[in-house]
Amino acid sequence: MWVLTNVPRAKKRPPEGARVARRGVVTRYRAWVRHHRASAADSLLKILDHPVSSMLTWLVVGIAMALPVSLMLTLDNLRGLEGSVADEASLSLFLAESVDTAAARALAQTISERDDVAGVRYHSRDKALEEFREQSGFADIIDGLGSNPLPHLLLVTPRDRTSVAASEDLAAALSGLPAVAEVVVDSAWLRRLQGLLAVGERIVLTLALLLSMGVVLILGNTIRLAIENRREEIRVVRLVGGSNAFVRRPFLYTGLWYGVGGGVAAAMLTALGLWSLGGPVSALAAAYDAEWSLSGLGIVGSCQLVLAGGVLGLVGAWVAVSRHLRAVEPA
Amino acid sequence: MISFERVSKRYDNGHDALREVSFDVNRDELVFLTGHSGAGKSTLLRLIMLMEQPTRGRVVVNGNDLSRIGRRGVPAHRRGIGVVFQNHRLLFDRPVFDNVALPLTIAGYDDREVGRRVRAALDKVGLLDHERAMPVTLSGGEQQRVGIARAVVGRPPVLLADEPTGNLDPALSAEIMQLFADFARVGLTVLIASHDLSLISRLRHRIVTLREGRLVGTH
Ligand SMILES: Nc1ncnc2c1ncn2[C@@H]1O[C@H](COP(=O)(O)OP(=O)(O)O)[C@@H](O)[C@H]1O
Ligand SMILES: [Mg+2]
Image (cartoon, rainbow over all chains, first blue to last red; front, side, top):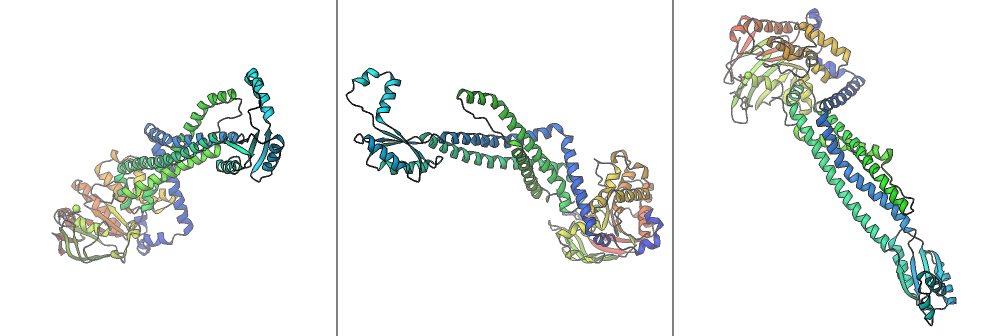
């Protein structure tokens, strides 16, 4: 139609290239948005066209992401436990035998005035013997002793309860006092837990890094196959003037969708694991009379996980596209 | 419109596909490029498409020296050229309409304009009622006409065709060539590579002949 009816005008018409160049920025922007939308939709439809293989990809990505995330959650929950353990952290100061009651009280007062001390409880040797007598059932033997063999005891609570280093510094300072025979730090447990948590954090971090790389490689490979399958299409698109960005876009969206789907799968797997642990954990907590329950990812955490999946998918697609698309030159 | 100035092309394997070729195709002109198989016809078209770079010499298309066009400029350059291939190179996973619409989608036209232009192009090649058909259901001649519709839908100033009738019988071939002649009449610059001398010599257009990469005649 346009070809035959406009013969005289057609000859004066400026070439198409020039007219395209003159089209406004707004028009170009609209075209750009249109192609983004079309690529996003097409890529998603192509993925959904193969539900089984797509599900498998999502599951693989989901498992790879859920693993470090669950470990991280475990660590977070243990850290909550650490807080409650720290409440009990204190130093036991056994005083020298020569220290009498008045001196012990005075010492308790002096120590409680220190900046790094939250409180001091004085436990007299008489009271200790009394308790021991009642609770141990060795009343006869204890009565048979001529004198009280137990020392005075000061229970010191450090101000900084969560820091093992602080309580150890305090212990060192206090053990230097002449009246103090021995200092027992009750933070060994805490110390071990903190050590374990630090190691665990490293392991999770390393694992997350490795598995992220794995996800990028898996998705990169998936995108590479998609590129292989659409070789001829890519060539034709290039021949009729498709830019690199145009050719790249659908593959980047494919990566994005695989990643986002993987992130959703990871969030679901994590929630599932937590749910299956929830019953036993609350039973355990009840047995210990503890108010402690597992905390999960939450809405925000789950969204972050999905986002992270999307980012990994994009990175994987980008790697594949930049490595393999160039090889598909029009021929 | 298309101008070759002492153009030589040596492939990486040392083969000289074109040697010192010079010729011009004017605006609105249809020129046939002929020669035996291996004479360098496809190579010449590939230089215009920037699928290859000349080893020596200068190619100018629509006033643009192609050696000045960088990597980033190649897509825009190709959008100004319609191409038709011997084997059509249609995308078989989508209907005729989508195949023809491809250059417009790339250029970023909106759906309404795409629909209008695709139908105009399909009408021109006589396939208006086949827009929803899948390419496999079409005959060879019809597939080639879809390829032609795709080449002209973006209204490029230049139209190239490499053996467009290579797989068609003589009657169909004549029809297709007539179609190209119509495009040249309305302002396109058309260059068609074909070794079918008996067919092209019947159409009264300029013929450029290559032999072993050399230009041996233009009449
Ligand atoms: N990519 C390539 N690498 C090396 N030699 C090539 C390549 N393409 C074509 N040739 C050679 O260049 C010569 C011209 O090829 P071509 O342009 O395809 O000729 P025609 O299209 O006229 O048949 C032939 O001898 C062919 O073998
Ligand atoms: Mg050829």
